[in-house]
Length: 240
Image (cartoon, rainbow, N blue to C red; front, side, top):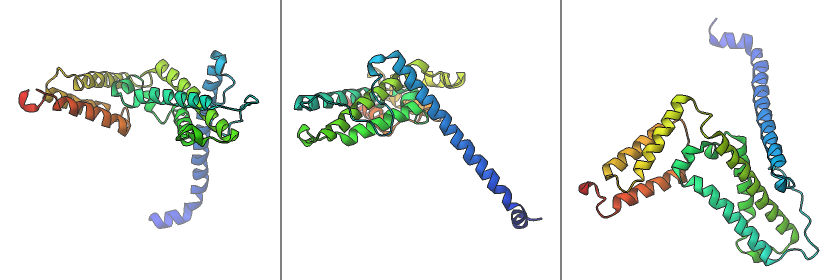
């Protein structure tokens, strides 16, 4: 019986198989969501000062403000807090060595990483270009809650990333990460020759291939740093 006839005879088997596959995928997502919620609840128990903040990605209830509402100083403070969390995030995005040490911070397969990236997107989307844009209490509530949620979600993800470090990798993979870390250090070393820096950069990328997906901004930051070193006085290939 050739393939078309076989398919015609047994096509009905594909229906339960498709249902099983879909069911398995839904179960995996539900399991990850439960794990995500468990970590958030555990964090709240360990940090009562943030227990009242909503770090979910769904709609957030408005926080009751004082009878006088909000002021320009309140908005300025929220903007400063937003900037502070973004700076903490950029400290990973612009530092390959730091991402190698704490790979979870760039791993979008991790629910906690996805949670803080979504919270960042929400906060960035609600951020006013200037404080005067916020003219309604509901608008202020939405932005302030989004910044709070971003700060807490990032805190949770960062603490987890520092706890697990590279433990999710096998021993051979950890060796490769260690090698890549040393190579990045050479690539960023102004005392190394241009040839050494270029070779180290290329080897570091090969070692990381398949282990960590570096964000485009991270790669660009490293390449710019290496390029600047090559352009410094005495740093051209001819002077090596």
